[in-house]
Each structure stands twice: as structure tokens, then as C-alpha cells.
View: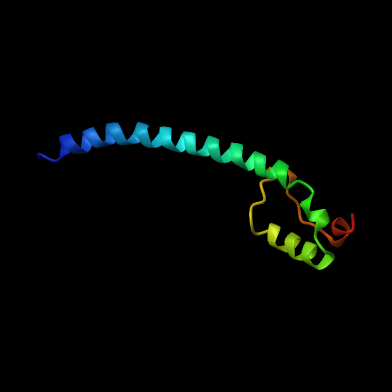
Amino acid sequence: MAYWPWSLFWTVLNDPVRKAFLFIYHHIHDYLQEISDQAFKGVENDLPRDAQAHYFRLSRFVGNGRAEEDKRTRTSADMTQ
């Protein structure tokens, strides 16, 4: 019976603080990801052909910072460009 005031206090305090932290964290993450994407744009062209094929196989499973609508399955024709 005596526990609910502490639970209410912690819920009222924790939820906004947690949401604010996550909001700030995600904005910093997105900003740094944009910097990384710009810094490494075109690096696939510098890789050897066998490493490039390995990179394309992995990029299907690992997020590479591209928007969902830009993602598509790569073919061997894409690697020759």
C-alpha cells in the first residue's frame, strides 16, 4: 500500500526524462551517421572486385545508412558500374 506513491513519482519522473534522452540520442546518431555517409560516399569504388562483391553481400544484412526506399537487391551488373 505504501509503495504506489514512490511508483507514481518514479513513473512521472522517468518517462519524460527517458523520452528526452532518447530524443537527443537519436538526433545525435542521425547527425553523425550523415557525416559518416558523406565521408565514405563512393568508397565501394576503391575496393578490389572480390572485396566489393563481399561488401555488397554484407550490406543486405547490415544497415548502411541508406533510406529504405533506396534499398534494393544488388545484382552483378551493379558491381560493374
